[in-house]
Image (cartoon, rainbow, N blue to C red; front, side, top):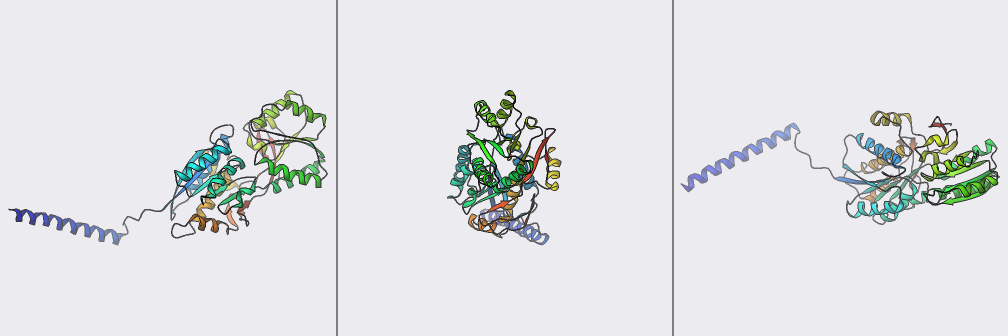
Length: 367
């Protein structure tokens, strides 16, 4: 009895094995064998997704998701992990610690100098690639950090040239005490001396400052031709409203400032210098998906994601972050949302500055 049962069991097993072999051979011949799972590349994204400039963070997030949707077939699987840094360097540092120690990311994408300066001290020692967008290009000094930006040198050069063209010789400066404004101010001071432009007042304030009236009254007495603003929201809006309350008619100019506000009507008619202009192809794709224009730095984030992927896809097997960083440093004349761009020896991808004006509540490119 037991021998008969054993024969039946062995018979069933033999049939099962035969069926399995037939299936394997069949799948091999038709090319339907399940491929080995792709290696995963984890990418942390630290953006201001809440607060006064959340509209910029959301647009940047959308641009990265747009880039991811366009990838097609890749050698590796790319997983995005989004974190809200609330436009705060300390929060960005906390996010970076979590992304590195808990999520074990291979790379981090960020925007703006404050957050970038919070992330780099965490990412660089951990050998985590950091793709940033920061006026403070020193964030790219390490091997693993890269910067995609219109540099202070580019922006200030255009600003001073336009001031000279308009006969502006006296400027009252109002800026935020942060890592993004400081290098721009330092460059303007240097160029102003060369161009015989006098800075009659220099006022730097903490982010979130709600009282400019005393400084505005003092500035008006200096009889400046313009107020030069390197402020972000909400200080920027507060400044404009308080100047109006004081019945001042002094024109305002800026570097990027008016792109940091959703209340652009406060600066109707004012001109300023901004970052590079993305090409029509990127803008059209963005509008087609999201139904609105991309905001400041959306295209830069789109590029940073694609540059990172290009670095990884250069290898057949999953590379180390050191290999990827060294590869990105060699990139020259690569296609981007701004045309052809290249990395310099420090890992900075530079775009051209543009002259802009607020017209009917919208940004108009003048050059």
